[in-house]
Length: 253
Image (cartoon, rainbow, N blue to C red; front, side):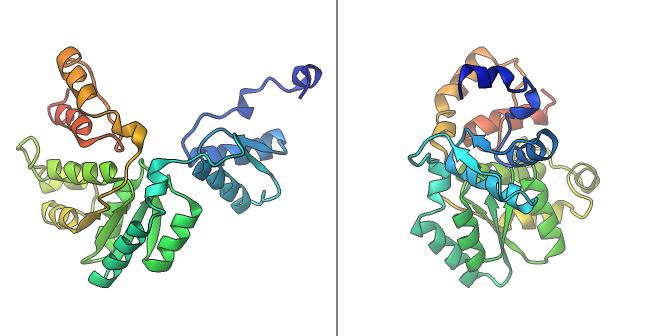
């Protein structure tokens, strides 16, 4: 694009979107429908561009090309961990070991992973914002359900830690049934949360190398220099970082 073309391009923030791998697809649809764009450039890893293209196609815009930021593959260690034979073997073992099993797969994986997983075991895709409710809803609707979560080991372990906190294993104070129904899910209580917690099978060998950096050193810095700070932690961070936020939340800090 030459300078003249750039000067004629609309200076409209609606043509630029900073979002997660799910929302960017919805934003791309709005750009096509509301701003009339004829192509999308996705500045992210490969599974993000795949997701954008799939969402555009689902909304009737399969003719809109989605361009990646480089010719060579733009990989993600987390997504790649679900493309290994070991992940498929884990799914196969889960299907053979349980009569009622649901695979909850993180959206930050390739379309191939989602398709192959579905061919092995019933699979539902989740985001970090709805994974908790996905598990709660599924376990409430299907008795004796085993939930296989992958590929993000940190996220899976952190979800188990969250359920442990509700059960009083973290912080020492368990939620009563009324609080569980009010703040977590109306169909659950202490007994059902314990059953859900014990039914979760977390894939043991998947993580993002970037999130992995937020481990012991960061935890030590936060504890030594920012102990009075408000801490919010994403489900994908290492457990020791997530525990800081979880422990603070239990005492309203």
